Every structure is written in C-alpha cells, then in structure tokens.
Figure 1 (tube, one colour):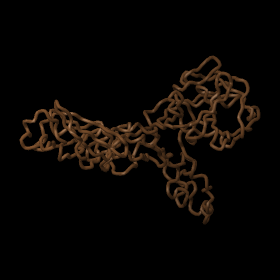
Figure 2: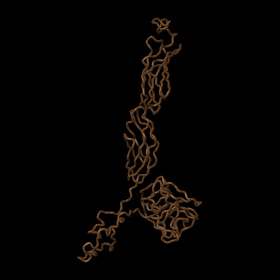
Figure 3: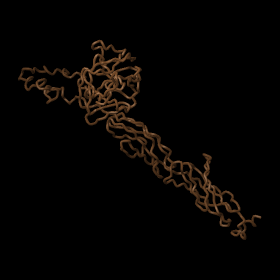
Figure 4: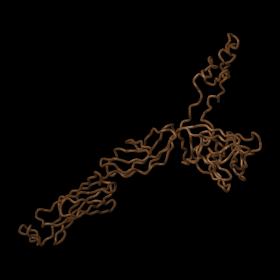
Length: 433
C-alpha cells in the first residue's frame, strides 16, 4: 500500500493525496526594530521532492519553558510568526495542507532565542548631596535577548547624555529642581523612555563667609581697605600709629585677641523677609505683603509654650520645646516695615505662593520631634512646617522639597510687630526676628 500511495508512478500526478511533512525547517529571530515582548520568528522549510503539492502551510513556535505557542499561516516559505515574548528559547514545526488534507508535523527546527529592543526601565532615583551635582541611578531592564550597550538619559530642564553604567552624576544649577528619564539600547535599537524620576532640588552651597586670608593677622589689621573700616572707625590714617605712641610690642595684637572663634563664621544671606506677593493673614482675610502699612493689624495666636509678655524671654535661635500648642487667634500690630531688593528667594514643597529670603525664621518640627524656630535656609527635608488652619488646628506638613532660586531682584519686606513676634503667611507660622 505504501508503494502504491507514494511510489514513483504516482508522485506529482497523485492529486488525491495530502502533502508529505515539510523538511529542512529553520528558525531565526530578527530583532531589529522589534518592541520588547513582541519578537518575531521567521521559519523557512521545503517539501520533499516527491510530495504532493501543498496550497498552504502553518508554522508553530513552541516555548517549552513558558508553555506558549504562536502560529502563522501562508502559501509559501518563509512564514513569520509574531507576538512572541523577548529572550525566549523556542523551536518551530511546520505542516502542509491541500484540498485532500494536512501533512504530519515536521521535525523540530533548530532552537532560537527571540530578539527585540530592551524593556522600558523603571523610574530612576535622583538625589543631591553636594553643591551643583545631582546623582541619578536606575535598575537595568530586561535586555530583549541581546546585551544592553548604552543608556540615554534626559533631564526635564533639557540636559541629556549617554552612559554604559546604571548611574550618573549631573552638573546642575544650584537650587534648581528637575526630574530625569532614561532608555536602554541594544543591537536591535532603542527602548522606550522610563517614567520620570522623583523631583530633586540640586544642593545649594551657602554663600561664602567673611574670612579673607590674614584679615585678623596684624600687621595691617586695622586698615584692610574698605573692609569693616567705616571712615574714622578702625583706620583713620595714622591714628593708631604715631611713632612709638600706640605701638608697644604686642599691645594691639595679643594672640587671638581680635579673633574669637565664631567671628569668621557668620553667614550673610540678606534680611529676614517675605516676598512681595506672599499673602499675610489678617483677621479679615489675606493681604499681599507689598500692600501692608505700619499700624496694620495682622493675625497671630497665643503660643502656649512662649510667654510673649516677658521681655527678652524668647530668642528665636535658642528656643525649643517638646510640644507646641496654640490658643485663640489674636492680632499683632505692624510697628516697622523695611523694603529691600533681593535675588535669593526660597520656598517649600513647590508652593510659590509662600516665598521668602533665606533668613526668614519659621517654626518647624525637627526629625527628632522637637519644635524649633529656624532661619528658612536651615530647614531640612524630613522636618515639618507648622501650619494653623482657620479652626486653630495645627497641621504639621512634612518638607518634601526645598527650592532655591536666584532671579531678577524683587521686593521683599521685613515686618516687625508687637506685642506678638509671630504671625501667619497663608497659614504658615513664622517669626519676625
């Protein structure tokens, strides 16, 4: 029977027979341009020379590890099977069909690993602990079947670059905030951009202190030109040096006499002020700082941990408390307003409605649970701002981000008030120093 069915005399003219199983089945996985987890397998094959003709073929890719199959049907070799996962090891089988029926399944093809571009990385992590530098890192994504050769990163402010590593250091303007994205590349192409990282504010280095080399080291101590020498104060010409008169050896320069240790380290950030458009709370609503006048009454409160009636009972730089509670709202009167122009401004948690200079004292709860008053520049991420709502309830708002900006000079206002030295800007409890 076998010889009668597939014998030499009945080969091509035996149109009443189904095809024989295809032979020489070969699988490849071209990855160029293929998205991650959408790889293709190209399957080529032949019919045996003595097989009845086929009108269609079906190729099936089978992954034994994941137990998945994908198929493609067509009228000739090769066939392209799409929709395969990336970096999967698979083999292919082919059957041939005609009007009579379908052939047996071919032998398995060679084993092939599916190829594509890399996967999308997860959102990077960004931080800044040194002046003018952000550090950005991420986890390598699945490579799509071929080694990752490059990462391309981009910052929300337009800076960009390439690296073979999974972390970078980026030079940024101090006090600016930005996010980062990254994609991976392999031999088959570029993957997709990751989600944006967390927003990071580049570390701001404090302005340089007053410590010119040798300033407090005579000779010449009393006359550095223009430096702490208002006319007639430290250096009237010749005043301290008539020959032999005020200069017994060592008289004006005992070691360390004019250099108490703390003297060199007094930073100057400008006056303690709120920016002109920051809203100051009154009993009748909120008023931009620029519209206030001496004699106006603004909103304050009783702070149970501070006795405002005792002269000199409070020093903002030394006060601290394990608790903070407030009583009724009260009014305090503006006794003085000083307007200046400043370029260095800061604000918290992206809230540009409450902007201030670096030295404006604010109430905070520190990481160890202590309540203090700090100049705004020294507040830290992880501490909490103290806000009081219209019902007199204290809300401790964690500081998650601090923005510093250097911009065109803007008007800022130093407000002095009595009898209470503290007041509110948009509910934030601050002090007038």
